[in-house]
Image 1 (cartoon, rainbow, N blue to C red):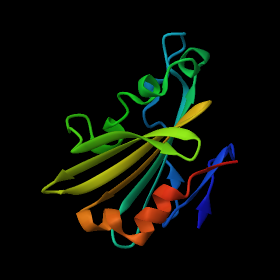
Image 2 (cartoon, rainbow, N blue to C red):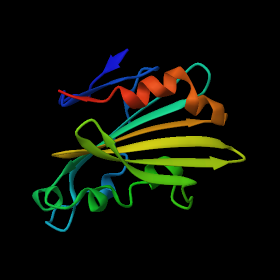
Image 3 (cartoon, rainbow, N blue to C red):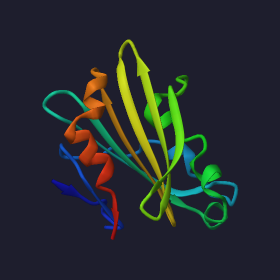
Image 4 (spheres, rainbow, N blue to C red):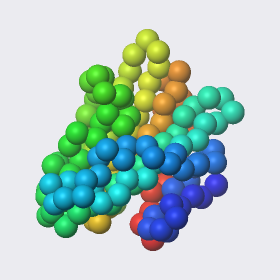
Length: 151
């Protein structure tokens, strides 16, 4: 099913219904020019086979829009792997005409993959976590990560 956030700025093919998680990560939004984000919205869902999907939108301040992609996307990996985890793979990629950062985490508890997209006025973070690392190579996962489209 295709999904778009309330502002309809992009669409993604998702395998499960996503619901907004109100109040998540509000500490990243400040009322001053030092903050990089004007607003943060978090949407999550789980498939019947317990794979967790996450989409986070971070609306950029004017100051943040002027930063290069590496600085815009730096420090956001905690959304995928948690506060104390280190990615097992981390690279900048090209997604159509957009720059993105792909991170992978692998541990005894499972695997997760994240895609952080510099989408001009906002950063979009797409994440998938599963107890089975092979799920990250499934058709469902491939469609999810390749389906991002600006509207």
